[in-house]
Length: 452
Image (cartoon, rainbow, N blue to C red):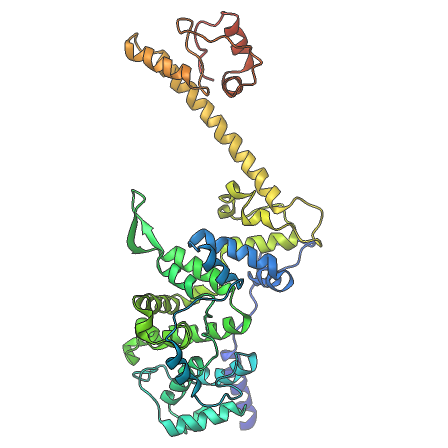
């Protein structure tokens, strides 16, 4: 009986610790379209099935946010070798004197290596209370033993007490520092510096020293989408660990900027350099990593317009549900939405650029109607003014503008056939109507009709 009760209690505990991955939806699904619960599903599908289209989409939006000259853009896309600071031959020679490469440490980043290092990350996530975590070094002999076990691919039980959290923390930094290339890659180095320079503008359009947090988050979201899959996976695990470490800074005394100072040399500094080689960029890089740590929960979500584009790319939907996408109307010819056609499996509907163009034409016609109405009211007000030199001057100015109606019969009138194809004639016909212009040609129009 006791055994049965214990089993039931354990089952309750297991259920209590289990995270529910299902949620209820009251929206009636469309039978013709799949039900997708992951908002990034179509983004990931676009990345894997159409990598070039995905890269073009992301790059076009990155260059909208940060200024990347031709050479720096070529470095970001991989068309040219990245140019990063270097300390010269002596520093490189010392770097080559490191220990021989192992299966994990010193080897290129792989999913197998991440699986081994995840053991350290999981252990550290349970010991965030340790003061000076990632700052205080561990014991060298214990670290050597732990390194050997990880290199051998061993599954380690770190809860036995044989190792201290500082041992795991020091080894995690060592692993990142010994990667052949920084986790954030040499190609992205210049882009990270540019994102750190994004600041707000004042009322006069001048740049201020206040960081533009929203644009920085958006730019980082896009940039991190271009990382290789293994780099992106490990970076997500690392930033999540550091984010929760910083949230416990009241206990461990490690703030986001302290953690950034510890990790920036290992994940973003170019290889074979010292602090003196980075000069003023070192502070920018440290602040950039601190920003990633503070906002890590947002960094690996695709911007809403990327999600919507990817969804439309595969579903061929005729509806743009996001108002933000409508702001891209002005760039449909050369913008990212017009650059990539709809996928071939999609049903025969309009392309995304065509859908947005239709929406833009509706908005354009509404704006034009409003402009015409405003012009009528303005001219009527001027026409009702008392006779004066000022009124005559204003009427002459109206006469000079091709988009405005002509003055009354006292104002000199340049005769022109009412079917004239000039810009002035076209706009006049749209504002006043061809009938008014015909009457004016015949000299029968004396006063402007009241606005409708």
